[in-house]
Image (cartoon, rainbow, N blue to C red; front, side):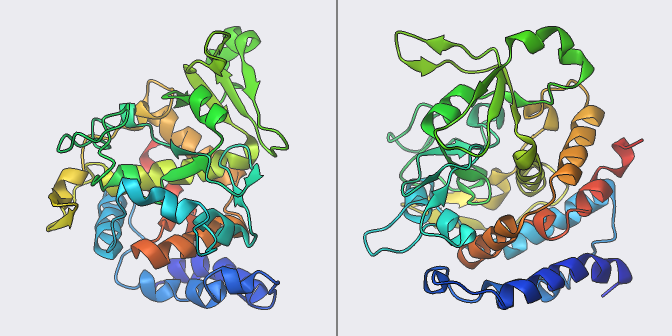
Amino acid sequence: MQMRKIKYLLPLVLSVCCLAGCKDDNSDNNGGDNGSEISKTEGYYADYDLDLENAFLATELQKMCFEKHKNYIPYSQYNSYCSKTSSGRNSIEAVADGSRTNQWFYTGKEATGYGTREHVWPCANSAALWTHSGSSTKDAHNVDYSAYIGGGSDLYHVRTAATKVNTARGNSKFVDFDDDEFADSRKDIIEISENNGKYILKTLGCDWNEKSKAYEYADKAEPADQMKGDVARIIVYVWVHYGSRGYVPEGSVKNGGMTFKKSDMCGSLSLTNIMGYESLDKCAQKLVEWNEIDPPSEVEKLRNTTVQKIQGNRNPFVDFPELMEQLFDQYLD
């Protein structure tokens, strides 16, 4: 293993040592010793070159994501992994938090249910990659509930969220309202929160509809500082795994009597479709900034291991957040 990889692994190993010595009364519900699983990441990355940069790194990481991603979860089975089951098994969110309740994305509200499904990268902005036309059982975004698999059902990507926050955010792109280009519109920004929630979502162009008693879709949204890194690492994971990054995966996956070619899971995902900036440079710079100001928490690291047990792959930007700067090196000053 090269020196850079050892440097990246050191903080992870130290955190594992701390986690291994801190067990609580929920240890029987979180799938075993997460620490021992996380300590295996060195072997997980052993066959891949993490010293590459820019497009070369994107191709290498995409290759790794597809080679390691063995179990593709159908969209219709999402709630069986992200809510309580009849047998009492904790959900992914509860396991990762080491608790008996879920933490909803954006707001941090604790609840026993999964709320609603939030595509951090919205279906409408996915160049139709999160949709499938082979079934009559679809939702408003044309998602095939009975069989769909791919980026739109990836457990690293789809998160549990409060319904009103999910609705208010809608298909809006992420921005930082402190940036100069939003100075004239800051007076119109509203904050969406959830009862007892730890975090908020700032939105622009989002109005309360008195008739429907719900928020109308926002044009732009900004996650709280404590969630910006989480959002950035999910976005870049999706961009690498399912975008056109130079690697063409072979093989297919069958589900519900349908066959999904892995190559069809990839498409023209652009960062300008998820970030509210016109230039790719600014999108990349903002994602790197968010990744730096909000590094991976212990909960995020544990969730990485929990999902790996289900899908087989990891989000490399949670293990090695430094990879994001290498990935976008050409766009940084």
